[in-house]
Amino acid sequence: MPQRMRAFVLLCAAAGIALLATTDASAITSKQCLARVNDTPSKLVECVQTNDLWNHMKAFQAIADANLGPDGHPSRNSGEPGYKASVDYVAKAMSDAGYDVSIQTYTFPYYSFNGQPTLNEVSPAPHTYTFLDEWGPGQSLGTAHAAIQPAGGIVLPPTSSPSSASGCSPSDFAGFVPGRIALIQRGTCFYGIKVQNAQAAGAVGVIVFDEGNPGRTDLVIGSFFDANGNSFVPTIPVGFVTFAAGQSLYNQYQQAVQLGAPLPTLDLQIRATYDPNRPDYNVIADSKGGDKNHVVVVDAHLDAIYGAGMLDNASGSATILDVAQMMKNVDPLNKLRFIWFGGEELGLLGSVAYVQGLSSNDLSHIGYDLDADVTATPNYTIGVLDPAGPDLFGGVSTATFPNRVYKASTIARDMAVSYFDSTGKNHEYFSPVGTDAYNFNLAGVPASGLLTGQDCCKTQREVDLFGGSVGNFEGNVPSFDGGCVDNPFRWCDNLSNNDPIVMTFMSKAFATMVAGMAFDTKVMSSSSSVVYNKKLAIAADGSRRLPAK
Image (cartoon, rainbow, N blue to C red):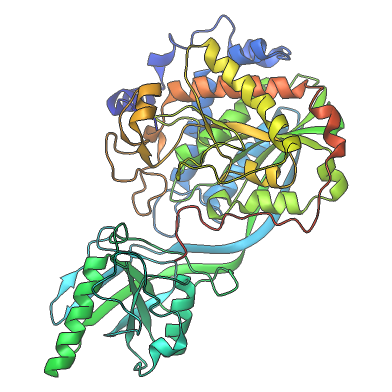
């Protein structure tokens, strides 16, 4: 997110951020803060200090380093030992601070690659496909060494707009020879439907290539949904390739058929671990004081997506943990419920499990939600969650809510804005879509929060507002390679992918929101009037990064 000077951050990390001591100098020490009652925004803000935040970050990095995932790299992904160790770390810290801590368990379909998948053309033109450039693996299982055969419905040359329905009908596999790898063009239906039709025809593997229309030529790695919209993991390997790679394979096949020559043969290897019912956890910590009929939820997701997950979202997790510790002596007017959700990266699973598991009475007592989702981006934006704001990735507004949700959501939003204004910093609004706050909005609960952005691409308008550079929010800055967070097999979302200075001012802003809502009477006094429909669809957001078709 914000542009950062990597060497500076690395130096700070190595030196225990000693260089930041002067910039974060406070008239009060952390020890004094923990001993006093920080019951106003001004008191709480001065007690949110860089060293405390960074110590939590170093602890999360150490947890990841000590717990390797199936791919052999440090990991805090849901369903893995590093995530459970993160849960234990937070639970102990909150118990030690005097909060009432509980662990909510739910299950989810766990998937992890075991090592790096490979795709090679064995013959007639041996070629190793460049990983995450020419090809990428779908979340599937198995290996295949076989000749290819195109499915019906492929449109070449491509039309000016999408028109291919290749593989969407069982009839597209009429005459398909069992034991071959199906070559299918992107278009029209879910990738999962194409794969199911291919597997029913006897395919031992699938290659899906981009359609070739303008804007649909690059590598796109899809997720798998059946005709009813249910996700699943194919039991044959599925690889995705660029349009150019797919067109080349198609042409090779046609030429081989015309000449009576051997068909192109591929070797596709996707070794992975899949567990449809892996346990996962939410950490829930309630303040001792506060009206239990008026609850303010303060949340962050604790899980990573690919590896250590230090920016996304150890940073937000550390932010709310530090705020909670600094409020341990506060007797709030409204009960504070700090929650660290699991499975956010897999489709907001933890917050779905939490919200859907509440009785209508319990949910009616939740008057507000505050979400911290990425708070330390180097090439940052200062994002404040607003239900009517544009999506971080798409740039358009996609969600609408009734006034009782929207208007109340602006209360904490404006608290953050006032803080940023007071420090001379700009801000922009972002939709909660893709964050755990969205599930609370859907259930009728007002919500806001903060984020500093991830992946690509920061715009010139945002550079004008916040400095930095156009391109990646984080990772290799400046660059347009997509960043560290949501790109598999890079393993670079580590401590050095975070800016402690950004983390500090964002955490201070978030603290003003928590302190303000802890003593709010206008919004929270009406929280008992919220009505929750148990049949309400809570959007899991599928995968906000992997297109379905």
